[in-house]
Structure formats: structure tokens, C-alpha cells
Length: 446
Ligand code: F0G
Image (cartoon, rainbow, N blue to C red; front, side, top):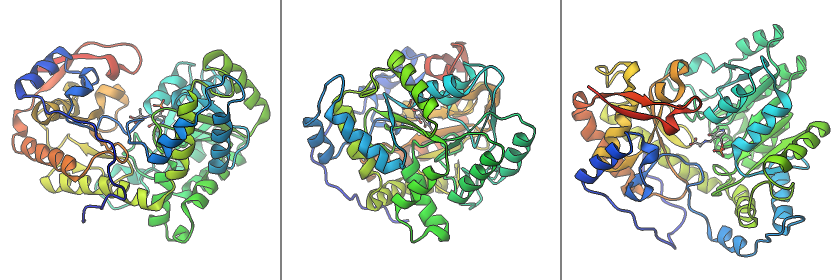
């Protein structure tokens, strides 16, 4: 494909630096080979995450200047409230500082020891929050997602047969549909799949919640890949998605195009009241939920901007460009290209490194060593035995990097491919009980 032209020009610049090889090697050693511990100033192209890392628009900056930092009744909250209501179709939203705060509220309100949660695949913080109250997690990705290289357009779908079986056996207390399916390769969920999952949920009287982090990107794929919705606007698709749920939460750091923010919406008024009580205890008053007025302003504008089709065309075009070039080199990638990131499956290419030695982490380290490129492992280091793949994720921040940054990544991936037999595995020397990848310490294990 042709590289997508940026539908913006650059008004503010932030210098970046490429440290020397010697420095990069020393930094890796000091960081105990954990990429989260590298100072961002020493990263040349940072594809660690698309969460809160994007560039703000001039409209967002302008709105932030008008922010109201009052504790109660803030003007900025009422702007954000209206933006969330327009975006979701839900009333009376609850602000949170980021997605995982909403996950904690949901875990406390809906779940208990032994309660079953079914999902197309939960994200790691959602899983962690639900496990911490003793829930049982059932990830039910569609069988089509097992074939990484097929053209199947909606590999983020939930397996409706398995979902139906578990509901029939009365094992499920909550269904969470993640749009797009981040852990499953940034792949979209078809609106029809969501509708069928919701019909099942209603049949068995089980609530369905949407994890709406990347729902604008999801809507773009629904419009492009399901001819039934080709003439719908993105807003109509997003609203139709929310209509098929009993609640939703969103990290505003993704499709909210904001550096910080999130919300929770719930249809059930009693549950909403319970959420507000806990919110005040954990996050802050119901008119800011842990956010500054500036965050609320930029989030309110970001929600609107995320539905601009020109923006989404560029965004998904960047992901497609990087996916295609990396695939051409010979790496296995999750196909077709997803919404926010490229996912490279390394097992075939790095056959000499067994899964116990974290082959995807080995590529993460090598990308930094060779090119000061930062990515993240989504495999055995992150998910232990539950890992279905050994992925390296290259998440592209919104509206930030240009073609030459992506070409740098492609060049480094080319070099590594040629020298792939030189890569070594890693062993863990320290790990915490939850979400171990964030704090783990490692050493090379040749
Ligand atoms: N759900 C999904 C699908 C996510 O991708 C994330 C965060 C969250 C929930 C939690 O939101 O970070 O605001 O608390 N994903 C980031 C990532 C961290 O890099 O994919 P949060």
C-alpha cells in the first residue's frame, strides 16, 4: 500500500535522541533487561504503547486553557459529561482517571469469588482486577483467530458457540466485549458478533459490558469490512455498538485521544449509585473522578475528533504500512492489519529460543539494542502459561510519528531478521505476584 498522507501539519516539535550502541547496551543492563525501566529520553521511536502518548490537537490545547479546576460542579466536567453522553448514548456517566479504575469498580460491583467472566479476550489490567476479587476468566476468541495469516476480517470476535455453552451451564456472571481486541492482536469485533453476544446475554439474564478503549477504530473497521454498514456514519456504528450493552468503560488514553482520562457508564441505576459511592472513596468526587479540569477538556474534544474518518484512515493506514513492510521481510504478523499496533509472532523465526526463555522478549531487547526502538512483549512473560502467542507489539501513538520513524523501525527489523540466529533467550531473576512484566528483572540465558 501507499503510505497515508498525514491529515495534519506539525506545529510543536519535541526533539528525540538516538543514544550510541554502547549507551544502549549499558541502559539495557541497568534496566535488568526490562524495557519499562528505560528512561523515555533514551528511546528513539517509542512504540511501547498507544495509551496516553499521542499528540493533542490545537482544539484540545485551546480547550485546556479554558478548564475549570473546581472540586464540585466544574464546567469542564459538564462538557465532558455531554461529550460522553453524545458518544455513548448512555446517561449519567462516571469519570475515572483511567480505564483500570473503572475495571476495579466493575470488579467490586459485579463480581465475587468464583464468579465467571466471559470475554473475547480480556486485557491484562482487566484480568488482574477481576482475578483480584477471585473471579474465573474465560477468554473465548473466535476460532478464526487461530490462523494468524488468513484474511478473516473480524478476528476480534467472541466465539458465540462457546459463549452460549458456558451461559447455558450457568457459569457466567458477566460478559466483557473488548473493542478492538487488544490482546488478540488489535483485531476488530464485528457489530453483528456483538449483537449476537448481546442477544445471548439477554436470553440468560447476564450483563454485557463493553471495554470501549478503541471503539472508534473498531467502528472504522466495521464500516470498511462489513458491507452491511458501509453507508453508516462512524458515530452511528459507535452508538449502535453501545446500544447492545448494559454498561461500558473506556480508557480515554486511547480513542479518547487524551493523555489521561476514562469513564464508566451503566444502565442499572442502583449499580450506578454503588459505583459513585466507591468512586468518591477511591478516585475523587463524581465531578472529576481523579481528573484535572484540563484532562476533562482534552478528553471531551478527543472523543469527538476520534470519529473523524480522515484521521482514522491515516491512523489505520500507518498500522497497515508497518504491518505490510515487516511481513515482507519474512516475519510472521497478525493478519490482516489491526487498529492500533503491529503484532509480530516470533516462534517460527526464533525457533532456537524455547518459550520458557521468552523469545518475544528477546526481540524486544534486540529492537532497543540495535535501534533504540521500544516495543512490548505480549506473550509468556506477560501472561505466563495463559499466553496463546509469543507476540511483540508495536503500538503506534496517535498523530505523532511520521513515515521516516516507521521506516527506521522497518530497517531495524530487517537487520535483526538477517541476524536472527544471534538472538538469545532470557530468564527471570525477580517477579511480583501480579502483572509481572511491569516490574520483572531478567538476565540473558544463552
Ligand atoms: N482495556 C484495554 C483493551 C486496554 O488496552 C487497556 C490499556 C485498558 C483496558 C486499561 O486502560 O491503561 O487506561 O488503565 N492498555 C494500554 C496498552 C496500557 O498499552 O495497551 P488504562
